[in-house]
Image 1 (cartoon, helix red, strand yellow):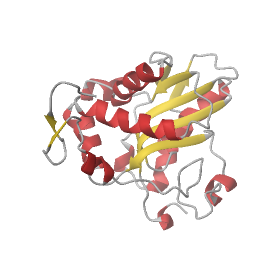
Image 2 (image 1 turned 135 degrees about the vertical axis):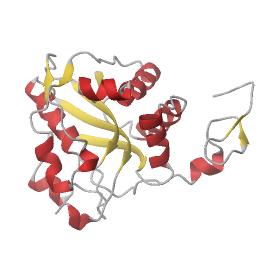
Image 3 (image 1 turned 180 degrees about the vertical axis):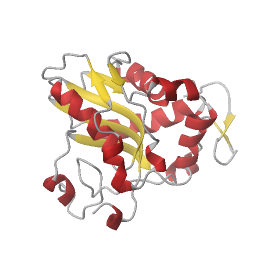
Image 4 (image 1 turned 90 degrees about the vertical axis):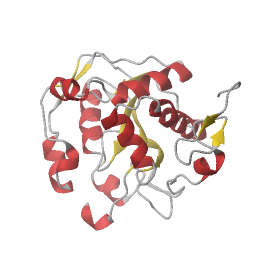
Length: 229
């Protein structure tokens, strides 16, 4: 919180004491309260969705700050592709607020940022998941481990592929050298679409002994349900 100086809202430009004015924050695209606790797909009964029942993912639950639509998508892209690091604290704070709402869950023992392949890291110059993870780990006083999980295969960006090809694209792309026996791990990432990448990493963490795996993402994409069924 900025106690001594005013600034301008990053979305509307209004003078405010925060990076987002109250009106813009209130109008951000929220997820439905009635959704699957594992993948956040909208479900009228707020129970586990049919997809997660038929094919249970390796992760335990997902927490997302917002829906991936305007203007959240623009904020994420500004950080990710334009290196606008001033956006990182805004997105991290939105996720922290959602975490506090979900305090019924056990706090993670460690936080792991979604790894980037070295080629992608050189192209972009930074890993947005690490930037977000540092801010969140500092606030929650939870260790952030950045050097123990690796993306060992360079793949096409998931956004360039149809939904049906995304799971195959990320198969066996991760490696981890941590002993996670019985630990609760939170994976930090910017956007969850199909969940294929998060699930592939979660499989590796399970093999290393993780007892619980929570996805912590800034935004969840909710496309036409017919696309994924």
